[in-house]
Image (cartoon, rainbow, N blue to C red; front, top):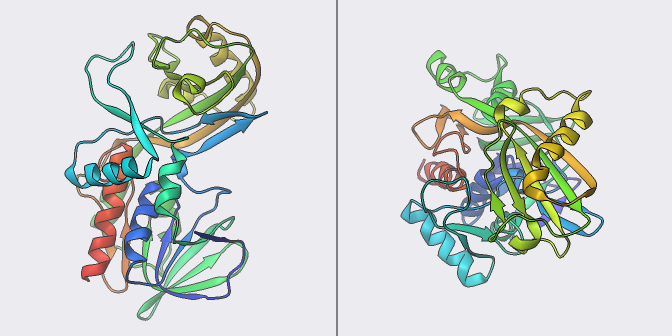
Length: 327
């Protein structure tokens, strides 16, 4: 994996925007046959498979586990298992009504994205400002004023952000495509990562879904094997997360910690919070991707297409890449 903060080559066969699992999956497949560049605005790849660290304690910040329904994803999970970067975690915890085998990344969930990204060319700390059609190719304008040309683009950010990138008169998308994209909606999520002064009282295997209006999920990163120190991740409910604003961030995080205390059962010594405006796709698109423009190719993909799970993000990226390889 080559992560760069500057570019020497400015022309590619495919540019993938977004280094979450959908983007990384698409790029890893395309890179076997094409010159591919991945663009990402963040400091680390993985998107919502992000991890976090507080004074040596480690956290799975976003996606907490993997489930498998599709044979294509099952094959990838088997590959990860053979490499030792994934293992079975549990089938059911308090608050869940049915048993489903869930896997976790080793040592954390971001490892899954890192494994797929090993041979990729990734340009980080850059934000795409605008995408413009230029004859038979695309011109991509970055916020640092650099320009990149590409024969094809795959957009994998949350759909409202992808719409913003193509919402200009230089990207000819039809009213039907726009309508399909605008029908996709997301719930927000406020995540709080909390360092504890002693182990939590969350029962094995280290996760619980409390019956509480403000909390969707609590995981014990120490029991999970992510952290050597007592550390929990708390995901707020969509209802509670919708209250978020920058001014309320600290108050909402502290209140969420208070709500979670009956399950956590230990004192929080330090904490950090992160807000995803577009966390969980609620109204999704039934197909694995949308072709917004055929020539030059502009494909929109992500976990809002093949299902609102980590598996869905993988399959959407996989299918989008295969479309470009065949066209």
